[in-house]
Length: 123
Image 1 (cartoon, rainbow, N blue to C red):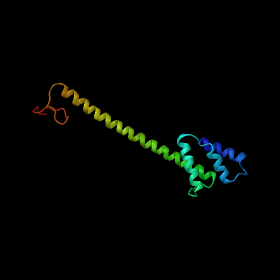
Image 2 (cartoon, rainbow, N blue to C red):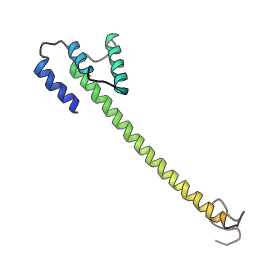
Image 3 (cartoon, one colour):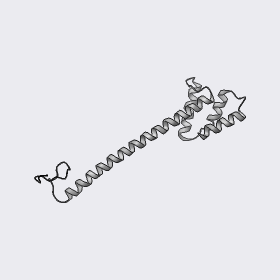
Image 4 (cartoon, rainbow, N blue to C red):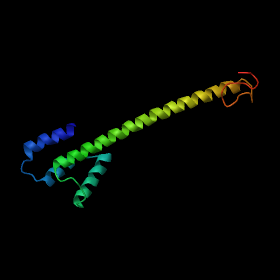
């Protein structure tokens, strides 16, 4: 991740005498906007209440990596589910299309469970 690498480089160059809490605050100051802002507020609340595993900048980076991995896995799962749902809708669409063509021919009651067979046709 570019963000984490940039923070590491800057911290090595400029934050040598800063304590862990200061480094964490510095990194979080760059987490802004939308969902990231909410996530940052939650992390800060956890830290202030002593309920966080984040004690060093590296712990924070690990938490960020973990969140990104979960987000990626969730997106991948959603993508797979959407693909599967699309295939199901396509199949249903084909069945409906077939039903429409067979019933639009004016042969009401001659279709059995959308299979295309007519009653008494022998096949």
